Image 1 (cartoon, rainbow, N blue to C red):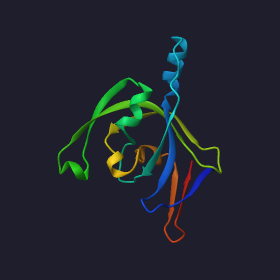
Image 2 (cartoon, rainbow, N blue to C red):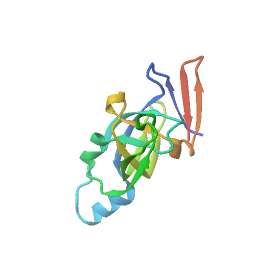
Image 3 (tube, rainbow, N blue to C red):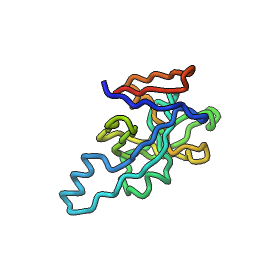
Image 4 (spheres, rainbow, N blue to C red):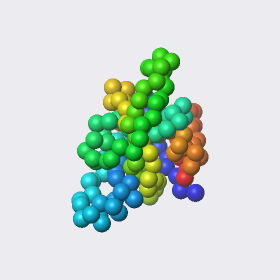
Length: 146
């Protein structure tokens, strides 16, 4: 089973991610003779408390992805209320220097405001459900096997 093995940062379990146009949307753009936007790099926090993967709205904007829906989310900052987030269909590539990386050809992403928290996105359980996550606190490393 391939894996991504990285140190745990002071700010948590961070992983470099490329966000791009989903594979199905890439095919539609090719058929229409349109250019495919280049993927954008971001640093995502692996968050076992997040049910869905989220991205800062500023990161997804340059990809010009169509909105596929909206979702109401509840977070500690909404103080019991909800916050509506636009949903986009995107491709994610989780990177590691020592492996080929983990590509997800199409996944719904929620756009919200995360930059103020020092991250570009959150890897939620919708992705973690496809993986094995090992958090080794004593060694200050984590492994994400896929």
